[in-house]
Every structure is written in structure tokens, then in C-alpha cells.
Length: 592
Image 1 (cartoon, rainbow, N blue to C red):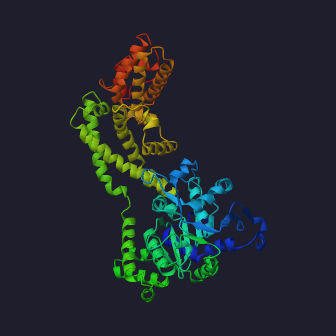
Image 2: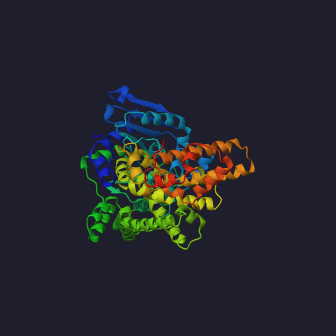
Image 3: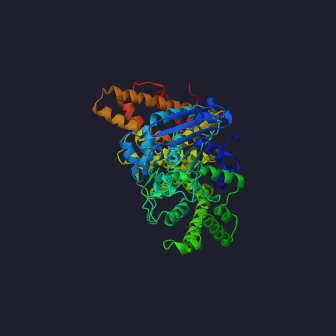
């Protein structure tokens, strides 16, 4: 097997049907014991609570397959929310939560089974994370075992290192795992979503469990291969509509809220024969891909009609079932697929708004120069909010921050190789933005009486941009200090949190005015002294910090009053001679 990242979309569905991946996955699931293999030492079986799994390394470094099998009698429709799991200190899936998706819900039966076996599964996960990163991994399962396979893969997402191949999850006839918000949390990353292939027989009741009377609080995710034929669906809404239609045809009057493995005919679906036929056909129909490659909407409708026919959802079936309208279903699927295609085409594209961002940055640079000439500096001008053009800057800050927050989120969701190239391309712009705009966020925070911005308020996207810049700086080969010295007059302070440290130093001075012998405050102020002097030695601070009306000079005057006129230090020796500021501004000051 090729040692590369598994691909996504129709290519992945075609790969698994045309190769022996599906066959291999099903053979590991269906084998009763290690004795069925000629390589017993390469297959390890484990029995947990209501769950068993096998780790198959028969192909050595070329492939590892983990197959889950649930031994529970039934699956219930109940949900458990991520907030309830968090309150119970079960944090395995908490990393999926975000500002946009603060909470989601999972199937209670599947999560309970996962939790009962968590210690053993965590050990298995540790073995995978520490194993050869080039070994492709497939995690598979049938029925509820497939649900556990999906949860296990998701738990791996948070642990897989940058050099690790993304795993592939293949499920057979498995029930849906989570609600619409859970689907959104997975689908926000195309690489996460592409890790899941769900093989479903149109006659199997379990995958459409919990779907009754055209409604469902559950939502599919990943790529579905719907059988009798190798038709595939990627839009989660299209998949849901198909499930609802199949439920109307096959499950009406059954009231499926749970499935008993012994009584609902789960084993009557021969997935072994299905995957064998898929391999022999080695074809995959995908109408969303067809639609992307043509402007002929009739082709889209024809593709949908063929897919429905393959699933036995035909006008003839409509005559037998009063509760399903095939024409309405076909029209709705057409609209859903058109919307899905449009959504893929209109994903956040930073290059489309780049020129607007450049204009705003240029206006912000003009603002900086204006208040440099007025001897106050743009940080204090913005913080004081006493000039009319400050309100334009408020708009600039919000627009730029929104753009770069989306940018950082987009990069973090990309596959690692693609994301690394993306970061490199946009790193200079992101660094300039951070150094120019984060001081405005700091000014907002301390104007409103905030304390400890760095630990209490700093935005995640600022932290991430700084981390990327630091990683890139490790590979720098030029003399950065020399370059800064030559261009110091034009630079922005390298540490975008500089003004937060100044504000904290001012607060410490206020504390010392109340309690003069506050040793902790004096210690922190000395540390700030050292920090500032190191920035100056590296020519990493903008000369604007020496403007007569800025907060840094106000801090120095208050600190000098506290320490006394006889106080000496490296920073004091520099600050006590104002001519040093002019020399620093042109890169002519030589630090001892």
C-alpha cells in the first residue's frame, strides 16, 4: 500500500472500492479467531466490557487494521451531551468544541461502551501514536462496533503528530453517532471528514436507526457508499434524505427507536458479499463530482435519478408506498447537491479579500505615523479615545481581526502539509498584522480595567500567529539583529504584547505607592527592566516607545521616582540620557 496521506472525497471512495481495502477490513471483522490466519503472531485479540477488538499486523509495516465488535444486545437512541461528559470529567472529545460549536451530542450507548473500555482503548491509542508514523492505519467495525471505530478515530485526531499518516475509518452497517453540531465539528475539517467511509446496504435497518417519520436529530458525516450499487454521497444532508426515504420504504410501522441484534435481522445483510462485488465492479458513481464538471443541470438530475434507482427508490416503489414522493425527493436532492457544490466553492478564500486588507493596513500605518509626529504614539492615542479618527481605527481593528481569525482557523483545519505551505505564504502578513493590531486589543482591555492580558484575555489567533513566527524564526539564516538595527526607525515592536507588560508595570507602580516595601512587586519590576533592556539590545523595540506622552515613558518616570535618583542599572544608564533615544532611533547606539 502506498505510504501517503489517505485522499478524500470521491477519490477515497474509488480507492477503497478498487483496491482490497474494503475486503481486508471486512475479513478482519468477520474472522472468528486468530487461528483463521496463517500469521497468528500478527493478530492480537482483546476482550473488554461489551466490546472486543483485534489488531491485525499481518501486512507488517505496510498496514495495520484494528477491528471492533460490540457484544451488547441493543442500541438505544438516547443522546449524551458534551457538556455532561465534561462535567463527568470525561474530556476525550472536548477538543472538538469551539467558539462556533460549544456543545454537541453523541449516542449514549456508543459513548457508554467507549467509556467502559476507555483505559484499554487509551493504551491502544498510545501504542498507535508511538508506532511507526509511516504505517497506514485502518480502524473498522460492523454495526455498533463501527460506531466505536468512529469514536476511536476521532479520539486519535487530538493525539496524532505532524509526521503521522491520517487514519482511515471504515464502518459497515453502523448507526449514526452524533447530532448536527457534532457533524459540523467533524466536517469543519475536510481532512477529518475524509477519514470516514461508511458502507451501508439499502436493506440494513441499523444505519437509519433513530430516523422516523421524516425526522432525525442525528446527522451523518464522512463519505457513504450506499449499496446495492457503489453509489456514494458526501453531502450530509443528502445522506440524511436518503436514509429518511429508505426508512419510509423499509421501516414504516416498525417504530425503530432501538435495535435488538438478535431480532432485527442485522446479520441477514451479507457485507462480505457486498464488498466482494464492489471490488469486482471497481466503480463508484458520484453525482456531486459530475455536477462540478458540467454546467448541464440535466446531467445532475440524471445522476441523482440513477443513484435512487440503484437504491430501489423508483417511481414503481412510489406506487407501492403512499408515504414517499420520489419526484419530490429527487428535486430536493438536486437542490442539496447544488448547495453543497456551491458551499465547497465559496469556502473562506483569503486571497479574495487580501487587497481590502492591504488598504486597511495602509490606513493604519498612516494613523501610526500621524500620532508618532504628535509625540503620543498610536497605542496611547487609541487607548485614550480622545481623537475623532480613533473610531475609524476601531473599525479597522474589527475588520482585520475577523479576517485573521478566519485565516488561522482555516490553516489549523488544513492537512498538515498543505497547512504548513499555507502558513509560510501568509506568515509575513500575519506577523505584521499581529504586531500592529494586538496593541489595540491590549489598549481596549486595559482601558476597561483589565489585568494580566497575556494569561486572561489574549486571543488564540494571536498566540498561534506568534507560535508560527517563532517556529519559522528558528530556521532563519540571516543576521536578524543587524537587519533590525539598520531599519529600527520603521519597525514595529517585535513582541506584540509589549504594551501589556507596560500596563502591568504601571499597575505594580501603583501598588508600590500604597505599600512601598512590596518585595514581590519590586522583583517583577526588575524583571520588566531586564525584559525591556534585552529588547533594546536586540533592536526589537520601536523607537516610538520613547515618545514623551506614551505609557512607557510614564512608567519610567513613576519607576524612577520609586527607585530614587541614585538608582543605577543597565536600563537606567540608557534611559537617563535622552540623547540615547535619538541614537537608538537611527541604529547608531552601541550597547555595552
